[in-house]
Length: 476
Picture 1 (cartoon, rainbow, N blue to C red):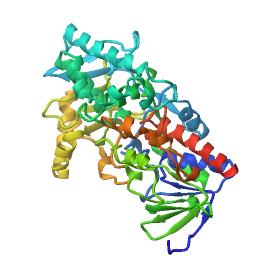
Picture 2 (cartoon, rainbow, N blue to C red; picture 1 turned 90 degrees about the horizontal axis):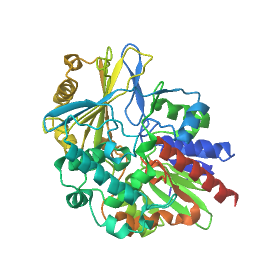
Picture 3 (cartoon, rainbow, N blue to C red; picture 1 turned 45 degrees about the vertical axis):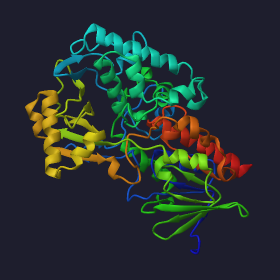
Picture 4 (cartoon, rainbow, N blue to C red; picture 1 turned 120 degrees about the horizontal axis):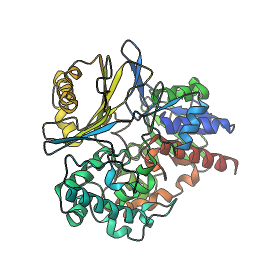
């Protein structure tokens, strides 16, 4: 590198999302000097929000939910003086083959243990169809039981067989009804740790592992945050010091000098920063685009190339009141009908405000079709879909709309998170165990987490672990 480094710190952190900022904050609390480099012109990564409407109601364009066993995040919001509230109870509205039902049950009912699922969606499926989905769910949970705590999925005793199949092929062999296949397709497209993905692109091993890693029985979408999750990154940056968190610094190359035990980060803007260690706090697919000198182990690098992000846009639609709150309280809608662009919605309203917020999601192939429309038409079809799903004409007239277009964000690469296809875990998974650059480079982010991957808690867990390992390395 020809440019003179502008600063030397104990740890350079690449990425100012939750994982990166929390890693930097924990390192700083241990007396280490840090510098956070962010390629965007803003903080937060996929933890990003805005205020909308006359009440200045918040909307989270990225993640938003917390669960009762996500202890690191619950401790963090308490540490930052942030309050949570219970997600509104109500019904799920499910449409299947032109039938519609409102039921008080978990959307992943076929994967839940006895007593946890609530009602079955009997209004759209026969007893036999529901039983077929549940028996397939039981088979998946039998696979889940083979995973050991704290171990990666390729250690499963049947890993080779499970990793050789897509969920599509497994469903063909293990279900007899269209409804059961529909259920697992919806699971792939709505469950955060799965990308979203499609059964044809995700391996059975990966699908089952994420029910071990991120158990839906622990209700991870139980709480929302007053003021939105998007307030957390700025609060962390304030604690670190804004002069130590630089935006518009897109890292394109990192270099390790083993003789000096020094790491350098070169940005697209032409600056060079030096440190004693570096943390890559970005999704695996994004990190794979950075040039490493010397190269990372081939197994890790090829794993990162095979860990694509999900394809999804999150549209936050604000209204002057919560029209969907009535004697039922419609908190979620699922409709994968061909005419729908929006296939999944969730209530995202704060009970202390009059403003109503619907989070609407467009994913997969329907996202690509939606992106071909003009901006005016994109909004029109979203509102039409909401009216069709909720049967409330007033939803045609929002007071504000904000769009989180995650596939368009090159520093995220997509959302919710990443997932892998057949053969990846068994052929490349051991790359995650490699000690790169004698421990001077670390990788963190929700995709890497051994628990709650795809959730904020997963990002927090990897941040805490990464900070601990960096301190051990620097003090060793």
